[in-house]
Image (cartoon, rainbow, N blue to C red):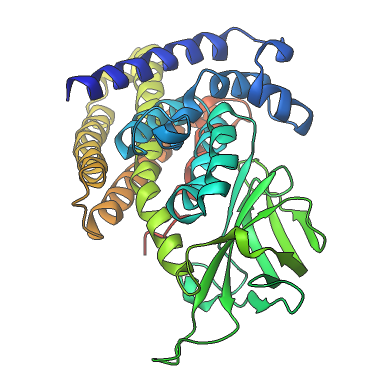
Amino acid sequence: MNARLERLGSLIGRLAVATIFFHSGWGKLGDLGGVAAHVAAKGLPAPELAALAAGLLELVVPGEYGGAFEQVSATAICLTRQWLARHSGALDTAFVMQGLGSYPVALAAQPELRRTLLPKVARGELICAFALTEPEAGSDVSGMQTVAEPDPDSDGGVILRGHKTFISNAGIADSYVVFAREAEPDPDSGKPRFGAFWMSCNLEGLSVTPIQVTAPHPIGTLDLDDVRVDARHRLGAPGEGLRIALGNLDQFRPTVGAAALGIADRAIEESARHLRERVQFGRPLAKQQGLRFAMAELAAEHVAAQLVVYRAAAARDRGDATPDQPAMAKLLATELAQRAVDRCVQNFGGRGVVVGEVPERLYREVRALRIYEGTSE
């Protein structure tokens, strides 16, 4: 436990470094190395590059491949996401997508592929994407229609045909993990089987169309038109794709709750500051009892949601998590964050909907959390 706490202390130190970068107007991209040199030309702002270059990406890779922990720690990622989302939803997304897009490789790729890719992820030299969602397969991932047909010209290889949508990092990713329906159903049950595949961004037949969303970040659709994938790049055995996808989501679902906690942190803090400073009817708004009641309830709900989130993360790290724990964590924290941000906007009045004000940014950034990686419903 002491060694673990020491590593977590190191994490907090990295966050402190990232704080300095984030607030310093850092602009010397060439000095950041790794992720900065690779991503600068693709449009991520300098502060985001700086924070990622502070060593945070080591948290999403197992220790054997350059990671900070022997196994990827949900608790450490929760701590990181809570801090990052408090300051920048875009930075939080940039960080966690490296985990979502690479963890399936750590789970199920052949050793050679793991040795090739994962150290690059830890160093920030490879941008990753997780391609699961389809136009008609959102919450119901088993409804995916992208198909993996056997490639007659490649022993064990497949040809991918289909469409993926709402794929974060689409267009800037170097590396995609793609899920598809196997051509042949399960021989015993007759039910569809699904496969998981790693593919490079430069494969022939892959095209990307950007999508504009409320809180801007790189996201888009993937069109797979006879994309050939080598047998070495299959993740797991045929038919194990759904298990890999759901295992990946189980690892990261508590961390969505942590990101929501970070947004709620900021919303509550901004509300409290504004209520102390804003004078109406001859006294600060913080003296209005009705407003104080609302803020007290949010603060209490925040403590409760935080306990549920970190309980789920700790259970995941111990290996005794149950499926309901990450689901509860995400549900409670994201619903709380939505209420906290809405109250923040309301407390600010007209300023709350002015572009560039913190409440307006939080309002855009919080909404997607109740949708992705499993809707509240």
